[in-house]
Image (tube, rainbow, N blue to C red):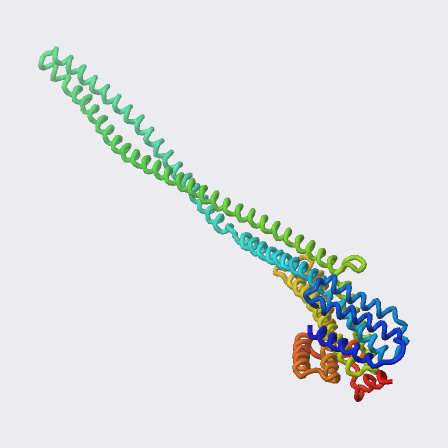
Length: 463
């Protein structure tokens, strides 16, 4: 805006320089008049409020008028043509910047998606790492050890119960045999008692010892039965306890199996989650590379359709404006130096725009190159980022030099203190962001130093 306003002011004084001329108008004077009318039409139509296409057409008409002239006029007229050429070229560049701005907004949207894919890559990998960190091998080993102990205890309890059951069965057989023997002794004693009842007392007394022997034998057998039954009751208690122990051990084994199954289920769920997260991360990486390729292709374009080509064409047009204005500085000091300074401001703005464009690309590529964990093609992103960073620094260095040249030009052309202060501040900021450093001597933005009073502005038109 500052450059366009100052350059418009420089162009505004040009028609006045030729009002006192005499004789037939030269080709240069006619070209100046025609170009001035085209440029004046922009101001009459509202300037910045006009449609960009209409504004561009007026500047294009002005440029066409100036290109047709054979520059056969006076030095001042020829210088005026070059100043108006600078104005026309700057005006056309301003129209180009609108298209560049639109493309940059499209890229900004793509950069936002790229950053989202980088975050998706990092978050998915973090999720996978967290899921993969679950390692239940220690718990499963403890459960396996406990199961072995349970099985050993069950084997021992089963063996003990079998031994007890076998002893009980043996005692049952012994008891049954003793009971039969006791019944047999009792039957023998009863038979003898029946027989004795039919004998005389003397004969019956002779049978009494035998009866007593059988009766005592029966009692002895029954006593042994009682003792064995008591033993068997104790063994049955042991058998019951062994059965309870086996039941508890079986319950522990079931719980152990359930615990192991639950741990394995959780382990499998975490493994599935990790696989899904890894797949999501891989997809994010593929999306990021696809978007990056699209962005680089968008910038590279085909022929002159890519953003990089537009940026270069944009700055090239403004370099041409600088060159046109510089050619007029020897014959139209004040007006040409003002035009040259203004063209340098426009060029510096364009270079700053170009630097920011490469800077934005560099930042998102550097973000990809430093993603954690590292992408498989991190080195590729780093290389592309380094290229964009170098382009940004180069453009920023040129912009700083252009602002410096503009500040010197405004000073030599009598620019306001406020204007020079603003340019100085802008140049200082660019130095900080670009790292400072002296301007190169062969830069196209180099500003001519003032060479005395503006004699050409008055001498040529008076004759």
